[in-house]
Amino acid sequence: MEQAVIAALLLVGLLIGCGVGATYARAKRGWTDYRTIKNSVPGARRTAWLAVRAVVIKVGVIALLLVGAAAYAATTADRERASPGPTPTVTPAPTRTAGR
Image 1 (cartoon, helix red, strand yellow):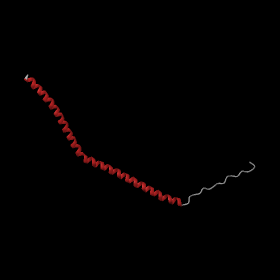
Image 2 (cartoon, one colour; image 1 turned 135 degrees about the vertical axis):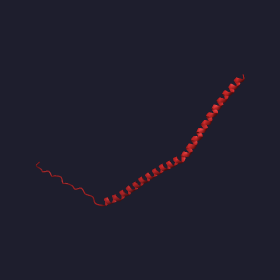
Image 3 (spheres, helix red, strand yellow; image 1 turned 30 degrees about the vertical axis):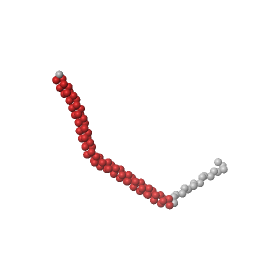
Image 4 (cartoon, one colour; image 1 turned 60 degrees about the vertical axis):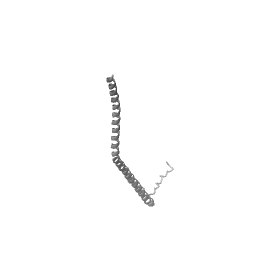
């Protein structure tokens, strides 16, 4: 009888030990993942700001090019309109003779 009680207690201890060990391993893995991600945040933040900076520079260059193109179009159009352009010439139509 004493051996059965010892075996039952050993089995219950093994089950509880496995559950506690699995929970501890999961908690330790979660803590390790948390520290890894926490340490990688400054690098990711720096990368994000570099990407934002690149986009802002590209948008600024495009805006400057558009403003320059609009200014160029505005200044050259007035000069062309001020000078006289060619006038179309009318060619006389051939006259018909009565005999034909």
